[in-house]
Length: 391
Ligand code: FAD
Ligand code: DHB
Image (cartoon, rainbow, N blue to C red):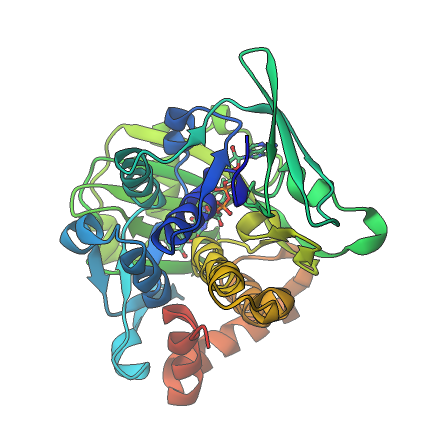
């Protein structure tokens, strides 16, 4: 088999890259280890920046997103029992974000790929990458017990943090930067109306809480929990009780509870691998970097990476130019480190860090008060939350 680009991973970055390349007339095959249903079953991000919305539009998959997505113009910060609104749109020169879940983005991309008759090989095991430091890279995989090989011009590693692509690069050629946080997020999804029109980020004595949503009838809530907690030991009732304790009186009153559709614990991590290109192998999305979820940058960064990558590969074929490919890593990393900084800062501001002691706690309170009172500080939050420009 031969194609122009082999994409490893059918998460949002792999699927979006496949569609952007297809639109540019570039053949690609996606190899995915799991089934399509499994990929859709993972409940993850929920907030899209304008940059991601524009890329999904460019890929021709924006119609349901615009019909069903909820534009949000502000967020609320809750601390010391009071909520303070950050006017994202007013402070960012008119920008907003769109609440539309990663599951829906993935479903839209899968459907359009199937409708165009493009090849995605699900349940591909033993994926291995070869000769990406030459002009003729190859990718091998096993499907139904049979081995296959695809020859290609480029390999895109869109296979997430635990994928094979980054692991295929010799350790001497890559540098990893990492910070792990001493807690995780316990998330719960339920078919209940959201507690508020806008997202609430809460810093409370019992730890962080986030009230988010997927639609006007589906809510997504998160609680900061110790890393030692097991999801099995959190009943729905225990979750709702704990959430109530972390809300202000009005939200507590309005909270509608119900059975969970999904519940899971995610550890929090900051991680960047540099560079993101090795000959004819490119890393994109979670394969190259992880942000702690506070501020919802993970999916948005995955989208901007593949925006840069699709442009670079298109330029290579259309204009016979290597320039985009040669600067891919540097352009991505410049945007990634700014989102890493923002996600680390917002995580540090909103969570409880017992090891930081009373002094750390006081500094956090002072910063929160400054943030909601100072136009300069809240403008910076708004500018980063709605997303920095790609160029
Ligand atoms: P992924 O979505 O991880 O997709 C990678 C794909 O590659 C997967 O389908 C995987 O099965 C496949 N794959 C892996 N290894 C192989 C292999 N060897 N061969 C073939 N295929 C392979 N972001 C937010 O903004 N907000 C959130 O609330 C949020 N919550 C999250 C919760 C969790 C538990 C996790 C893990 C992430 C969360 N994120 C969140 C981050 C966001 O979901 C990711 O940034 C986004 O999924 C990145 O997309 P991706 O396509 O790069 O990687
Ligand atoms: C969601 C997740 C986030 O990390 C965030 O900052 C906002 C929303 C969500 O899953 O809905």
